[in-house]
Image (tube, rainbow, N blue to C red; front, top):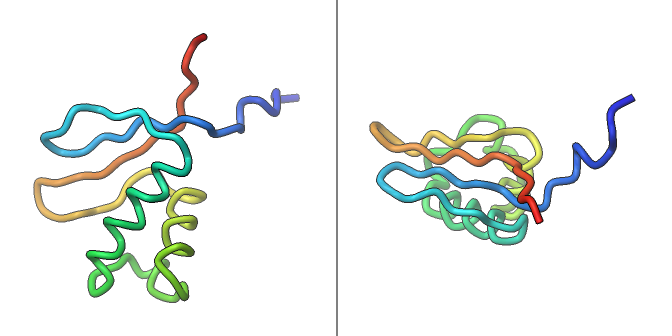
Length: 85
């Protein structure tokens, strides 16, 4: 049986075009996703278009995806990671 700790997501690494990698908490990543989604409301992936708010859209992305198409030559990807103590 898998260890439930494998599924706890506390820290994410965020990758963006032309930016150094960033380590973000869940709250920080949600804020980043809300900012990006807020600027793209006229060009959302189909599964996000039906959600009632930017908050719901960001949470859906966090729960179900690890990347968002932000245009030609650009990317936004995030992955759960564990930092060693």
